Length: 233
Figure 1 (tube, rainbow, N blue to C red):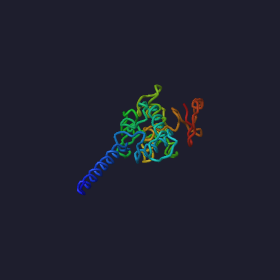
Figure 2 (cartoon, helix red, strand yellow):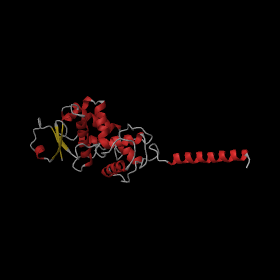
Figure 3 (cartoon, one colour):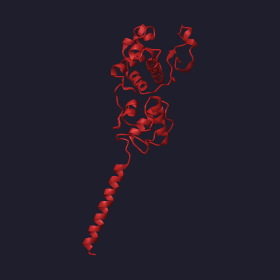
Figure 4 (cartoon, rainbow, N blue to C red):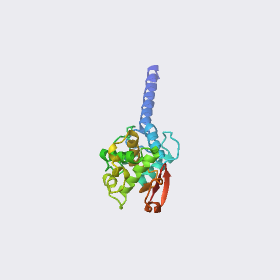
């Protein structure tokens, strides 16, 4: 075999090897692909893990690696939000989480049902500001979660505006503080609640024991105390 032929064969071999390596890399699951699933890695996985951990679905480390624990947390989130519990973050699950599969967090006011919009987000955040601006961040999310839990309940109106403006439901409506507007923190808290974080465990009532005058509210089963508010079912 001549030296020229040997060089050609080696070059061809290296070209095939390089092509195989490229194809292998392209075949690896990426966090920025159309779906995020077991084996995916990257910033989007970290965003998913961070949100799930904040909302109480995930207990693992924020390592950007989509493993068994992350899958289980995603399935838990999917079951709680009426999604197909396949453990894969596709478009529907990503939208419910407020996560963009391109690696950024979406800012639109959407929920798992996709029926809420930016006006809903603004009204919800105004109510949070009026009711709980002096509370911790978790306390703000909790108030927003109660409103959303009422929307889901057959005992209350089926819209955010209907729940908030139901007669006698919220002090901030009665005293006009609903019209004070909102701030960035209350907006983020409202968005987190819309994306599935419920620190109350399903509460549909809350009250401040230092100011409550209703004997009936004390009869409600108490779920958790966050800041100055007791949350009840």
